[in-house]
Image 1: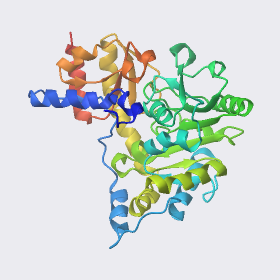
Image 2: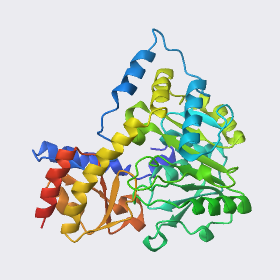
Image 3: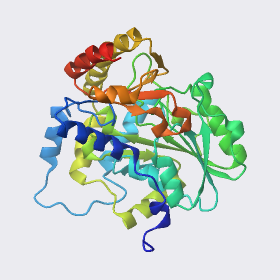
Image 4: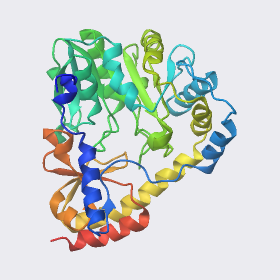
Length: 369
């Protein structure tokens, strides 16, 4: 149809839509399904957070302001200082967002990347590419290779790059970037005049050592960090996160956001204040993911399948399984190539089923032909 935006018309079906379609077919056929496909936590949102939301519900809720509540910005700033040891001005360097996905999508438009290059590592979350294409940018993918620790080779960057996306801990591989990498990235951004977008949705889902943030780079003047409560606090449906970045970019985001109406509801922001100010529930969440991980890893290894990277996040990046054979047994996983050509030969297990379902899946995995 001629009236449809050609970027949308040319775009393939969003990968996770296909997984949902597969799940529905299996359920309709009466198959017991254990879904390790889509990374949507099934963990309960802590009662303290839910109560904070209820307490904040007003009799009348006016339109929220793009700059967000001061309490929300201060909670985000305080958390960043406690967690990463960085001082971020809540008034000029933070803006609350409607989760992180919409803010990630829109950054290429806010920065004016039209006709220039937006680069990101591959395999990757699809939104970096889609945001770039809708902004009229050209796309450069940087293969993330196992031998490089799934880090991009910054020497491969196009000369006309305007925005470079990184995502560590990484979806889908679970790899973690060392702090030195962020210093190298910041130095490259200064030399070549580009902005760094750092998607840090998974920094709080770790198993051995807490991962660093791009904000800890010696020079963060070109670094824009995206944080969210979706995974940290099992609040995907609340749609609450924030951007931390240089004052000029944060000011641009505040100017852009009223146009698209993506300011989070104030009662959600007040619940988010409670979430950012509490670590107990995050530690409990990590414990639940660790328990599920400990159930699945032996079953995968017993089959001779290799778990690669997987140092953090809620994912296991595995070499060996046949997604089709698993699907026949009711186990849904994400084929690695869904995230890009470099994902071929891998599958991603998202640790979202219950512990009991993971135990059942471990039994099935040992039986798969």
